Amino acid sequence: EIRTLWQDVCEVSFTDSSSMIEIISVDPVATSAVIEIVREAVGNAIRHGNATWVEVTILNRAMNLVGLVIVDNGSGVTASAVPGIGSQLFASLSYQWSRDSSPTGTTILADLTWSPAA
Image (tube, rainbow, N blue to C red; front, side):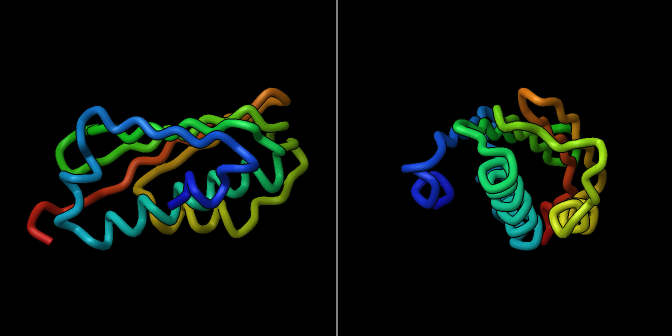
């Protein structure tokens, strides 16, 4: 869905070699959180950073922890930028998250919890 939405603007690729999306699908809250973080990060990379590509990697970090690595080639976030809705969203949906930005792109790392008994 995200790929289709931005297909004429930006190349969006996904890597899920551990099949984490399938594994966490038993927890609809965690699945929704992953989708919302990816949507926000991709949208921000394109709208604010003019990215032409975004790579999303989904990882099995540890027991009940799914990791997201979202990398883009946009213009980055300036040091003077005020955290906005996206930062609030990442903080509220993830166990922990960080952003590393430069004029050649941004990398967002986010770890989210999920429950196999959901």
